[in-house]
Amino acid sequence: ADIVIDKAYYPYLDTDLLMQEFAISKDRLLILYGENGSGKTKLSNLISLHLQSKAYDIIIISGSDIQYPSVVKEMENAIFNKLSDMRNVCVVIDDIDPKYLNRDHGDKVNTFFNKLLTIIDGNIDLDIKFIITTNHILKEEVDDPLYRAGRLFDSIYIRYLTIDEAKAILVENNVKRSIDDFIEKHAVEGRVKQADVAQEIDMGNMNITKSYYKDKTIESKFIKRKAGFDV
Image (cartoon, rainbow, N blue to C red; front, side, top):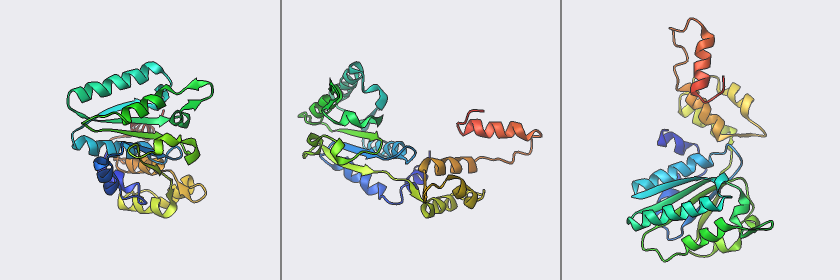
């Protein structure tokens, strides 16, 4: 993906300043939260790429796997293996259930949460960062211990784009197809998913007038398949 284009999806954030300040901060945890399709994963990728350029090794874990204690143990082992090799580490946990940001959920002890605090508070000479993305959460849903100094850098609400923001990004990226038609199709209550704008730009960057296709239905299937749709 084009990093310059990706930064444009967040007109309400200074992404460069965010990445720089998180990289030098002594706080180790960044939470990105918001609705599906708002761009949390894309932003976490941008930030981890920035950290990678600063000599951090990246570990990526699916949030759905955190429920398994064996996965949490594997995460811990992977982190300390990197640290033993004198490497800074950034752990990206994508799309975690908000309940795992609390010490207890239901009748179960939260193994992940306890291990997260242990690692963050560890007396480690090298640096370790966590970037966690999750669905929309309220402050009350995040356990108070995460807010203590040295732990949480920030929890940032990643919102949908306004119609004007979506239009500006499409125009800036020279999307040829009707922007008004796109807005009419995708805007809901004055908001547009970042994922829909990104998909429209990706589609617009393809050569959709390939003259060697005599059967246009074949071309249309190719475009959909390349964009990640089932055909």
